[in-house]
Image (cartoon, rainbow, N blue to C red; front, side, top):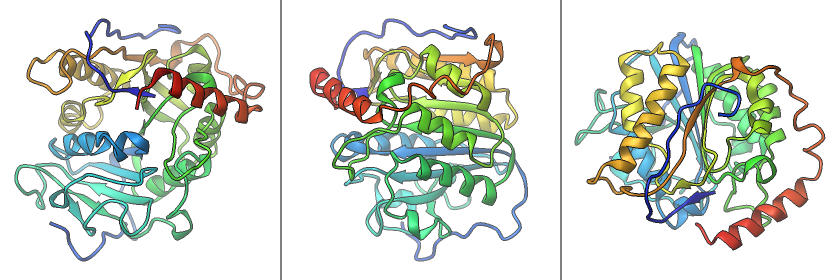
Length: 328
């Protein structure tokens, strides 16, 4: 889970080791999409972090305050929260996120785009998201797999990156708590692995968990076959999460930047945000790493085959940790 609080930023590390104004029309995906240099997929399970604390909206604005070059596709999925706080001036095709249906797909533009206003880009509602998934849980692995396929089919690219945003509970707690799920059951790590494995993307350049506690040997081993690099935290992340403007600017300057170099930018931007005395997150603690999965001695998708069975018990443990920690 992400932590909302104020304390000292103690350690940030970079590991390359084993441990270590709303438009009335919606955008349509191109009938014959041209292949871009890169497609970034943003999976935002808002949970109580958005409902009560507006944390996703904070990161959405950071993305639209960056430059996004023409040869980069930025596709997002929003869901998992009962209330969204992104101002209408940032939206095209909708007056509010989640008003017409809980789960929505978006195409992002940056402050350098033709539709930019007031120094920022827009997120434009996409019409092609499957109706059957308009009320799906973002903690369901089928929703994640469907989103990956939707983005890859409609916005193909030479390079793919995936950002997973929400609470994280480590190898046992999994990822993602959907506010519409009365059981508060997270997606297991084996579920994340299956969603990626069974998708139409052979391998991601980066899988970035903007979530707590997702840097463990088990998680890294489970996903190593499906991503060149993982960006992960071994500790709780502050509620503001990662800083997106800096790394999207870097990506737009070099759309084919290597996963390791981009990972370092993500980590450095994280450090800078929480060390900046003028930032809202100043003084909060965090740990973030970029892991080169190619340096692992073995890549093995069975890491969670045996550990993936008792998901109900993991969900109980996850809820207990939430209550004990008293974090949002």
